[in-house]
Image (cartoon, rainbow, N blue to C red):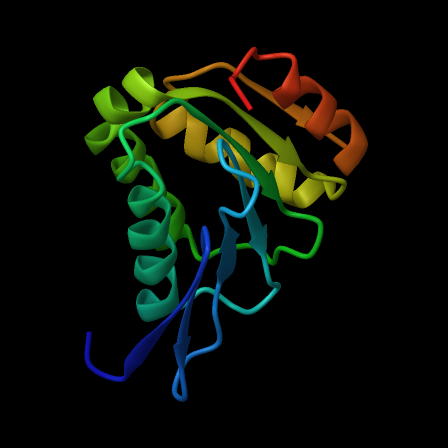
Length: 149
């Protein structure tokens, strides 16, 4: 992708661009648990698409995984991006059903919880999920899914 370079550390990726603040940072260092942390930067067409591309890339190993989405610092994405997220869920439903044991959402903010409900009203979440106020509870739930570590 023009304007981007890829930082590749063991199981850790981050898209970096001089022209773009990242919408989310993805950390695969604890695979099969993947952590996606929303940065708080405003969603743009460019950084939101990068987030979706990075999220899909987590499935490249074709191995079971679980994802912890940390929305503690998330801003409200544009409605158009919420619709794109719902479409992404629909398009990647089989991939998620095949490899994702579950997703934990850390969402202490009521407004962001409402955004998740909007997305799921457009497209149902295809795998088990739970919403938590803090990281410890989210991590405990993900570990209870029985993935091999």
